[in-house]
Length: 144
Image (cartoon, rainbow, N blue to C red; front, side):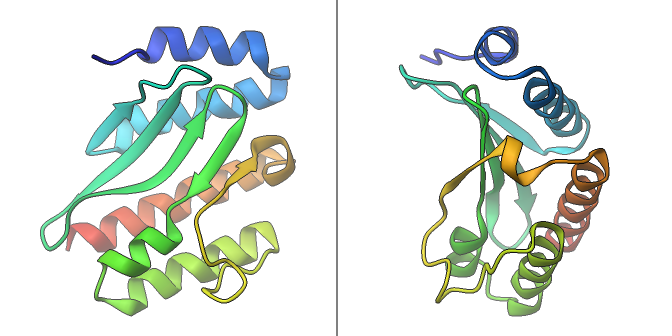
């Protein structure tokens, strides 16, 4: 049984996060509703999770990112490295994340997918838009 749904997720995010973090989260939920092949709401006790999934003909449903009610985001770069055989797709995602967030996402410096603070990752609206464009591009390539 799912503990979380969109309504509960939004309510908890608005009560627990700063207003600009909850607005970014709402933007990512809206983007997921419009673009994800599947949205999965978590069942955790401590916080809620929303997973954006893309359906690939070759690899099935792949989670591309996760957001939480406590203002965190996780990029599934290492999971994609283990599942997707077309390295150019994963490398393109890595380069776009690195240029957007000025962090290293290579397998040596980033050996496992971890949660990051939304507040730290997205300081300007343009960063949210760039991330959305990155996920749209990644989804399109995985759909091919």
